[in-house]
Length: 225
Ligand SMILES: [Zn+2]
Image 1 (cartoon, rainbow, N blue to C red):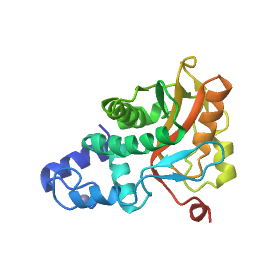
Image 2: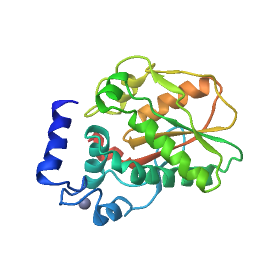
Image 3: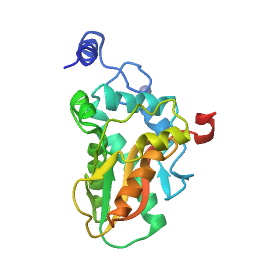
């Protein structure tokens, strides 16, 4: 366990647990933060190559909650974040309206990130969202189709063109395409460069990529200015 994780675990024991969204005392995500996460609702966000549906805006609450999930092992958030992703996925499925099986393909994490976090956090949410869709009668399965080919630079602070060149050639297919349609899934979309590259790799291999779903979207234009 890394020092930071150990410290967080110890702090929870000594100071009591806090809500990962607002840090008020309490176990898990509080009701106010839960409703803030869903306040905007699902909408389609601007993307060059495929329909992308997002379950909310990447505001302060979403930032804190996703950071707690990804970097502080707040595994109790799995269900609520999986549900957010499922709502975006359901909107994508309805908009594209393809019958048959859907494969939810998570954006790959680097092996280093998986080791550090103790889990492939995006794959875990893809599995959770697929489970939710199956409960609603949709034939949806998670598929870890992609793997990282090389180390990526941290995308934070990179412009649109830099993000595209950073991810170009970054992924490769782990297994051959399967029957059905692909829904790409990720936690956050900024410029959409990662989704575009995953889309390109999968389409080149013959997979039918129909759309993408994310938990939160950053304002693209303002993020780049
Ligand atoms: Zn809260």
